[in-house]
Length: 62
Ligand code: F3S
Image (cartoon, rainbow, N blue to C red; front, side, top):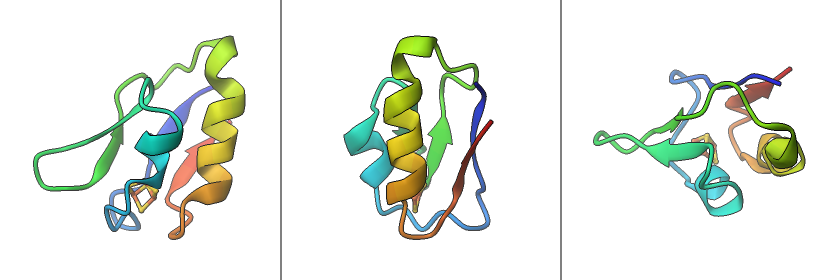
């Protein structure tokens, strides 16, 4: 699975890094990025939960 954050949609709510800090982090300008774009299998469930939980629908995973 690969994960990505759409920087045009992200508003820095931070839900994603609360759910899965192993994959998501905030940049210095306050928006999220996927620091581990190739998601290990054991973190896939957490990434999918982050996808569902982002208020801006900014995260994609496939
Ligand atoms: Fe941004 Fe959504 Fe995370 S708005 S900080 S990608 S919860």
